Length: 280
Ligand code: PAF
Image (cartoon, rainbow, N blue to C red; front, side, top):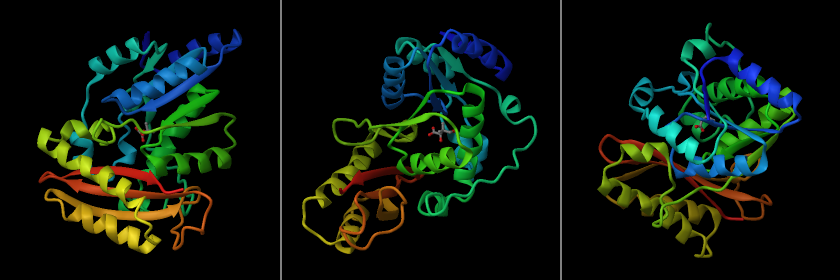
């Protein structure tokens, strides 16, 4: 696997592959890679001739500087995992390389980017669109792979791809979970063993709520009350939304696909965890 740090080197290298008619898959990441990322990389390796994995802790998508500061940084281990998954290129640029000047571009795709994470973390999706659009321009991938764990992020990126006319396929990949249901996330590295066990209740409660025959409002209340009743967990929001537009629904017949999206604070630090569940 090649480790590349500059945009020019990356472009040169990919131009050769493209001339040879090879297809390119891109897996954007912020590092601190785990089995969830590995599943995206393996899928890209299966479906493309060349797989590029970007490792870039993108400062413009963090609205809380403390969150950025404590985000795990594990470049050596990340490269070992990527070698094992048979990625071809790890693109690990510096912040100066990506943002030699502040990025002043503004992206706005309501309601996908204005609700839930968009409302709680102002500017977050703007930063995501800034970095992802740059990566799409540098790599020009045939396919780009994103984990469904960040369900809302995929909805926003789809809108950006349509808006800017990128010619590529967005490939959403299923959430990878521990055996107790906890969704794998780089932030789990910040949880104690006990907090991890507690955090597994988030998915357990959402999953339970699917089989109770409740209305949308009752389901909302059930999940929020149950999760909040577990010591160490505090729901920030739980929204039941149209799976495409992410607009709130009030009845199960409001949309062909309906998803519940949750954000929970776990433990005293606290660590902010997100997850979702599909109702239909
Ligand atoms: O999902 C992530 O890890 C990030 O938001 C992404 C897509 C790599 C952009 O920085």
